[in-house]
Image (cartoon, rainbow, N blue to C red; front, side):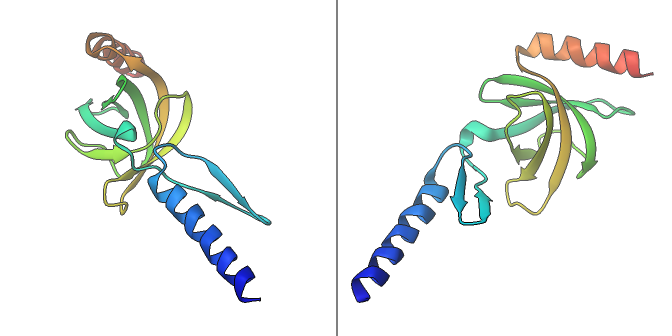
Length: 130
């Protein structure tokens, strides 16, 4: 019985290490429960670079360029704030602050943009929303 107990402990340790050190998000099935790891890798680090006043639209800089986001709740974005999240896909995403205490729900409108293209798209969104 001790060898089985030790094997289970080692397996759980490997799973925990994999979750903590993995640079991407991946699901792990554990019986009827599914655990989703949240990556805090630098590849998912976002810095708010431009917040448009009187608008829910803003820009973040990512490892792959800029993303155009629309704020839908939680912490209001402000320039130079840093969050973690995957904004390299379209749709709703929840971002979390570096310390994890703040969350923000956003719509990813576009991503992998150059700075110039991101600024132009932001200006167009703001113009059309007024």
